[in-house]
Image (cartoon, rainbow, N blue to C red; front, side, top):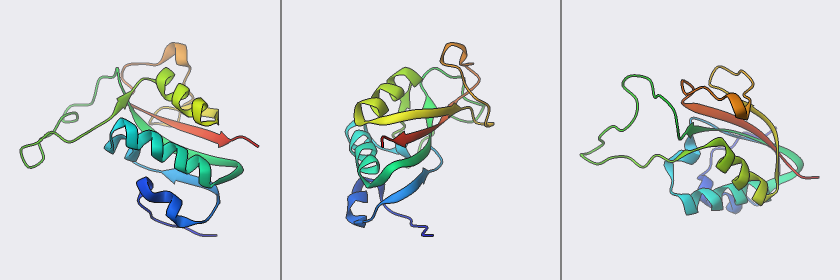
Length: 130
């Protein structure tokens, strides 16, 4: 019955465990590779056994909608992490997550063999092992 907002790079400081963690708006994509792996491991560590983690991420090979993509912020390109589904699944499984579902931005189930390039992001539902 608790909703918390926290810096995912320092999530271990919560000293709590959770049944469900929801990371919205491709938040994992706003950090570099090393911080991303640390963040995923930290989320795994604070989930209860069988706990669920839901997040979205940008697809590496996609056709971004018009107006999306690299935008200048204060004359600099923002860091955005793009990843293909197979690599994302490998990262998650190496940490210990079980893949429950993969969805497109409309909430439709995705098949790894038939991912359409019009999908510019994916949503993952994963579970911490029991």
